[in-house]
Image: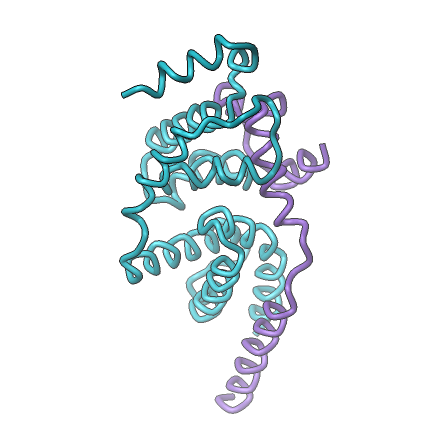
Length: 67
Length: 181
């Protein structure tokens, strides 16, 4: 249910799903989204945030130098 | 000049689902996180080739997927073993039917061939359309559809949730006959 809301946010286009057996009433579909959601809902690890900051800093520094 | 902050923000916003995709592909959290880091660096380096406002999620998923397969090739690794593991798992019957938890599901997912696994994840969990998923996996839309369909069927088999298999000895004998070569 919570997952479903999220999926809708992705603006999934939607002629489909009627025939792929992965819709809201499907066990497999629900399991898939629960499995995926369990990882997706975890907080972003600090190492990723650090990496992003580093990448950004390096770029800013090179921009300043290069003008 | 404006590009960098906003690219960074979009990348950040996509990280949770990118990570979920990585775990689904690799089946392991440690490897998945390495994969995400590599993807972030690759994406950052080639951000000029990304057009702001277009689907950054699909773009990042494509990079991650490419990275995953190129690392698999480099490892020259257990890909071969997948078949063996699959056969072995298929011959082990779960002691109880209808009881599903996350661990069971993950195991079932791991028994899928990689192309089917990524297909059903992209369509069933990541929220991509068949067209987008086909684009990410560089295959035809029809191929994507058939992979998803086969993946679903196989998951239902492995998890024994295809309705009638939930009950009684008939389900057991049905399994035995089905699995006998």
